[in-house]
Length: 205
Ligand code: TMP
Image (cartoon, rainbow, N blue to C red; front, side, top):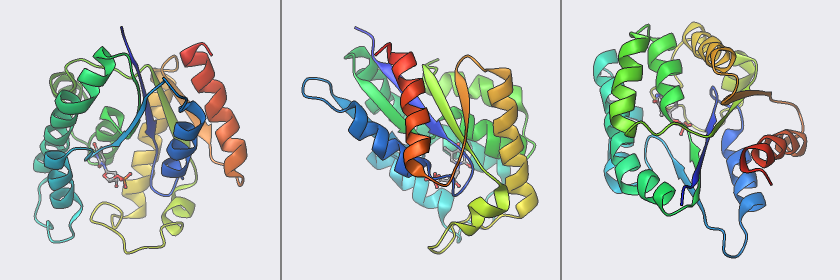
C-alpha cells in the first residue's frame, strides 16, 4: 500500500493554514485516515527545533545553521511520521516541506540550491510530495495580514520575502507537474474549490 503526500506552501500570510484545515475536512471520511502535520515541527523533537528557529533570541544564527536545523527537523518528522504513514497507505497533508527550504534558505538567503536538494534527499529519504500547492500573493499584502507578534523569519525585510515569493514561482514553473501555483483571492471558499480540483486529480477521486 502506498499513501499520498500533499504539501502546502507559500510565503507569509498566504492563508495556507486555513486551506490545509479545509482540505483535511474535505478529505476526512470514516475508514480514510488523513494525517495533518507541519514543518518545522509535527513531532516533539522537531517542535523543539522550531522554537529555536523562530525565536527572535536566535539573532546570531547563521544562514547555514538555519538551513541545517530545518533539515534536521524534517528528517525527524519524515522518519517518525511521514514515511510510516505512507507505508500504511494514509493521506498526509503537510504544512510546508522541502520546497520551503529551497524558497527561504535557497532563493531567500542565496544558499546553494543543489546542496539543499542533496541534503533534502537525505533528510526526506527521497520522499517527494505527490502534489504541492503554492499559495501566491503580493508580498507586502501577505506580511500585513500577520496580526500577532512577528517571529524571527517574518521580521525580515520586504526584499527578502520578495525573493522567497519569486523562488516559489520559479519552483512552480520548473516542476509544473507536481507544483501548482494558486493565486490567493478574496474568498477562501473560492481558493478551496481550486485546491479541491487539484486534490481530486492527484487522488483520482
Ligand atoms: P509557518 O509560519 O508557516 O508555520 O512556518 C514557519 C516559518 O519557517 C516560516 O516563516 C517559513 C520558515 N521556513 C523556512 O524558512 N524554511 C523551511 O524549510 C521551513 C519548513 C519553514
